[in-house]
Amino acid sequence: MQIAMKNASTSILRGCRLGLSFLPARFPSHGRARPGHPRVSPNGVDARDKRGHDASYAISMTISAFVCGMFSLTPAHAYKAYVSNEKGNSITVLDTEKLEATATVKVGRRPRGIALNKDGSELYICAGDDDAIQVLDTKTLKITGKLPSGPDPELLALSPDGDVIYVSNENDNLVTLIDVKKKEMIGDIPVGVEPEGMAISPDGKLLVNTSETTNMAHLIDTQSKQIVANILVDARPRFAEFKKDGSELWVSSEVGGTVAIIDPAKRELKQKIAFDIPAMSKEAIQPIGISFTRDGKRAFVALGPANRVAVIDAQTKRIEKYLLVGQRVWHLAFTPDEKYLLTANGVSNDVSVIDVASLKVVKSIPVGAFPWGVVVAPQ
Image 1 (cartoon, rainbow, N blue to C red):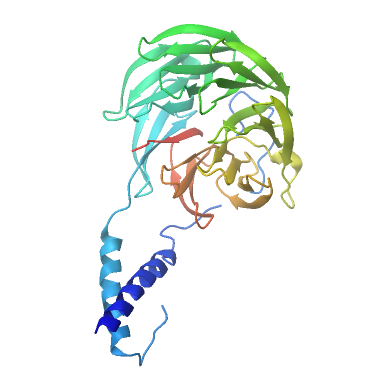
Image 2 (tube, rainbow, N blue to C red):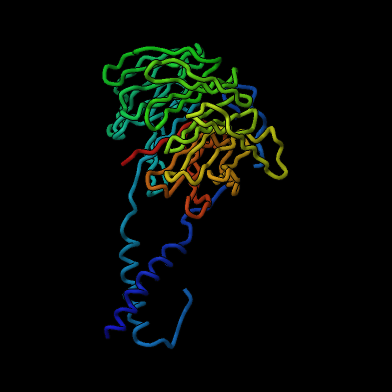
């Protein structure tokens, strides 16, 4: 009997693992020009039945089925995701357990960059045509106020302590600094022409802004508020992201079609990653959003009108595969458990859900008009 129960417990674990790993995807996969930006090129292509076993096997499989059934009834941890709809002038709220939209909230005009505060209670929204940062209470889904900004705010980054917001203002070539608690502007930093990408190092000491027309990544000391390095990258840099350990800074160049890898300590360019998709023109491959796994082993890069997300080995810099998502994929966000990666697809007006373990697209979720940014609440 002891042997039978030992076999049963082993089979329970094995059965649960197999059962969970081979669950069929619940949802099918699917196969913009940015308003006012004619430079964007046309869209790219986008348990076996076993019999005759002994009693111990029968017992173990019965218990295994019961236990796994209990696990299947236990809901996965649910997170809320928020998607900015650039032409819909709205924020769509997603339930990441049900993988569906649960609410749409009207906000200011042309919302693009969005960010959550540390506890996820407030969402900061770059309302570009209102020249302001709106504050959305994520519990009530009401706009509770706004923060001062320069003209046409596009992207923003929060300091690690959550006390300061750094905003790129596309029309005045400045990065604005906002005190979150006081809700007031505390300074600005001149940068290159048409600033967009914003990132801050994990230790909060280095701020990065990319200027689309100057084709540079500006490295800024957050204490002195001075630019300490200007690094030339390929044409029209749109986004910047640090690895979680701060060892590398990646900058995507939309028109150049590359991702530049920068050593932030030495303040120099290390290498570039180029992309090649069979039967697709180079002009259609436009890198934008970048997301790293926490362990730093993988990077995911949105390729705009190529309608693909590139999966990259972040250590060797080798491209592992391309995942077909919605049309004009722009920005990306992981769920906190890294089970899913969500992509905002601007032309198909949806969010693609990528299962990170299997590297497969498992669902498309309709959202508002021209989704641009996406973030997921920490809890």
